[in-house]
Image (cartoon, rainbow, N blue to C red; front, side, top):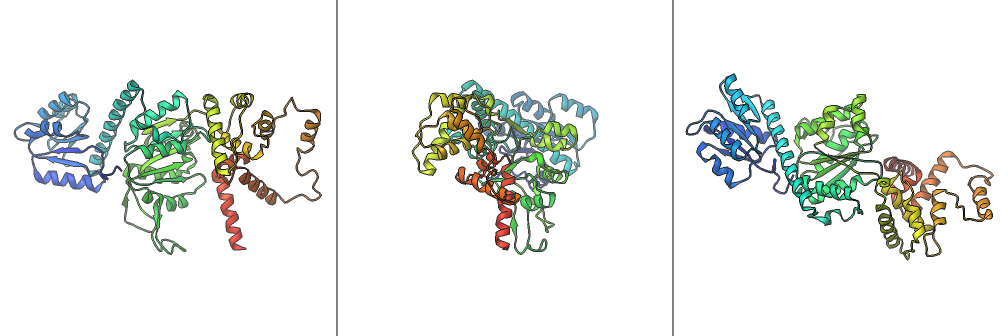
Length: 478
């Protein structure tokens, strides 16, 4: 949540002439994590309150002295039509309900209102208000053409107009409490986008990232919600889950499309109720973490196939961002390669080589299945291999396994002769040993960058991370 730790960002105005009703409404809202509330008894002061402060939504009692609820509804709709108004009344009257809805009421409820019905209606109204605010801000950004906080995007190297528009969209939604779904192919920079959303927002807590790929339901519960001491065998101390660590901040859930059905249900409850229960506890806790989720999978297709919950999909897609693959924004390729080559030079303490025009053209004309992650890996590998002070086309082709038509016949023969690295081994390594050697070589070539090493090995970063974790555990056991 923002620095003042209140929800929603703009206050809810509760209007009722009975003090007990105001106190009861405040208690119900606060117990459900809705704590930015202003109460008002005198209906004559409603418009003055609107002029003093920007209101999120209105909870309006219909029967009041001085000015009736219906008259107040008309005034709000006339002067502040962007503010959703939920009408409460003790009388069951179809004609009144129809009249209020025709005058612009967002919802109409008859007292006594069931708590879940009230909270559900209020949350829908808040989301509706947030979307209207987002659209207004977006319109201003489009008209101005300016990025207000460029520093938040300094780690995203681009000159592509689509990416610039994404930056503007992020600035518009940064403080929204709704989840954000970031989609795009592997390696396009979804976590960088999530980081930018967090850094530009007024959420004061930490940015916590959790890759949920391949995690079963029980492990996910522990990773997300944590556990209390004694929750299970081996739980010698309390563990804070990712949700608790991200309180008042951003929780980034990567590879969300890989969740199993049980895990999807747990995440849906977190999004719907804004509460969770640590393993071993029976006391629910409030969540104030803003959720940003990412996937390289087509979730709409998974919904149609019945393997991903439709209600969870629509919850996650409060705001959505699609990042185009690198092959569709080719003018970013030279910028990225030069940036990563400079980064590699700094980290490896080696002078940065020059990049001839023909080499840059070669890079621009290629497709990149691994996107930005792949081109970063290429830059690091180029610096490791080059010995002439230049990143030549031949060097790039040798990285990618291409045959250079300008090489001599001897060079081609040499390339073919050494294409099988095990051809001269009298004894083959075991499969597990060969895998370990490949992992070590990839990590060495990428200066220990696991995401880049995974790209070279053709596996996901999470798969490489799990292999390295197993290796460490095996060494500890031995």
